[in-house]
Image (cartoon, rainbow, N blue to C red; front, top):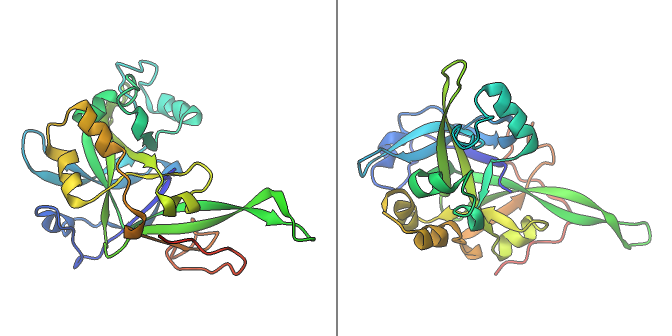
Length: 261
């Protein structure tokens, strides 16, 4: 359900996870208010440096590419594109991570990471109203930008996967954002599927990256639901995907307000 994400961070802003503020200052790619997952571009990721209690900030291709040895028919870019026409791997369902042995299990056990966000985008569906004031079966969608209160940037639980093109030798690290059941706020915003990204506060983000977790602990973290009172959401332009600034609020007078806890 999280297919649009943003990471527009100025150099004087920083994240309080170890010394990450120093790492953020190095990168110019943290200046994109809206990443469209369906173009399978790159998103900023916090990745553990193997064998160390240390991290790096880098870009990964959004849209998980399964391991070639488990999906032997995915060996080239052309085959990746055909796979993506049939399956969407931008998100990984938390309840299924360790049960999907082919797709996500190994990455969940060994390659956990964090996707950085300053706000993500989702749609609310409301029934259209007929001429006589009656609700119709047809629905209208209203886009929202969703963030975390008092957080200029926050962490989404994710898993990553290395992949190499058998023909060209191109090396790619791809990532999928973990999703969980929506809280009361997100149940009103993403009111059809009622899912939300697994947003981890700093202490849990640290555990997700560094601790040697058993399967029960991994599942518990993956299903973590950030409380509604820590989140905020507002409506934006319906054409936000092509807007110069997709973060600008737009009001829809006939849209009922969100019920806050």
